[in-house]
Amino acid sequence: MVDQVTGSRSAPIDVRRASGSLFGLAYGDALGAPTEFLSLAEIERRYGPAGPRDLAGEPARVTDDTQMGLAVGWALHEAGSAATPEVLEPLLRQKFVAWAHSPENNRAPGMTCLRACGGLAEGLRWQDATIAGSKGCGANMRVTPVGLVPGYDLDTLAGVAQLQAGLTHGHPTGLAASELTAYAVRVLRDGAALTDLPALLRRRAEEQRTVYRADWLGDLWQQPAVEDPSTFISRGWDECLAVLARLDAALLWPDDGADPCEATGAGWIAEEALATALLCAVRHHDDPVSALARAATTSGDSDSIACLAGAFVGAAYGMAAWPVDWRNRIEYADQLTALGTAWD
Image 1 (cartoon, rainbow, N blue to C red):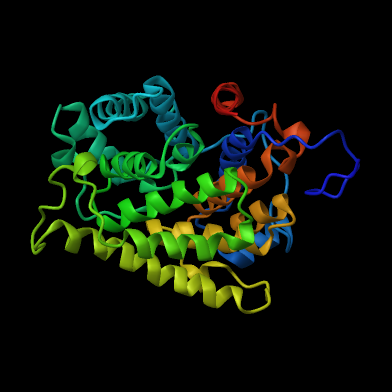
Image 2: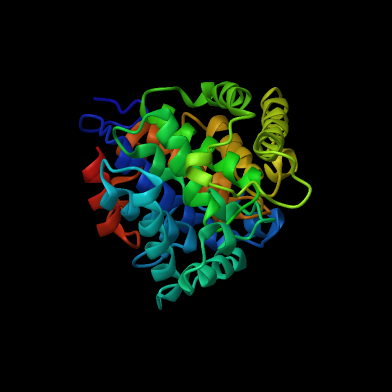
């Protein structure tokens, strides 16, 4: 038969969407890691105008983005159906601190995550350990497994997504962007088209704009110059809505080959990482490898942008999205396989 994603003649399509999303996260991370901090001109000089399109290394190494995504994934897996703040917070804390202390944590991890994990390791309340003013993309580059767990209703998904973000990034935009990222993976896993995603996310953001999840976040909202919980969280949703408007504007025009970061941001902060990853995934919705290559061919936080793009595309198309020979060439393939098998 002809594979409807790749256009090649193949065996029946592999629609394991949890596995496709987890592996897509790691593939994008590995492709984007060498291009982070490079200009678009330098990336194209090294890889050609199409950008990096194959894994390098045996195995291809990932960054802290995949490592922390796995930390979240294993916490969720161990919690099972007991998805409550009381169960999940200690598990997330344990996994994050273990990551921070691991000798494998040598992939230029973000300072926000390291500082917050230091407080978590000391036993501080997470609301006190978090970096309250940070909305760095570390809040949502690791959240995609939340959208893959079977059985979560949307309220649970939102609470889990915001909690895992809040342990390190206490800014309301980090919380809102993380929820939107997990929601995107969920609706794609459930069959939504990539091209419909911007409108679905805008609707979700508008619906949730004043919803503060006190059962998951506690008193996190009590920060200087904040009057009430709704005022606190609405700031985050408003910033997400603003960047989604930039995404909509970019998608109105034909692709001119320019740096996606020029349209929706460099991805160092949470809402821009989400929007720029979406821009690459939607523009190349019919060519998964090109979506990753385009996300890696960016002048900003290329590994985070590409890992999110990979998680979105993989959730939409499953393992059929990716070259078969990549499966055994990526770092942490055993863990990705185990979690994917549990959730598919």
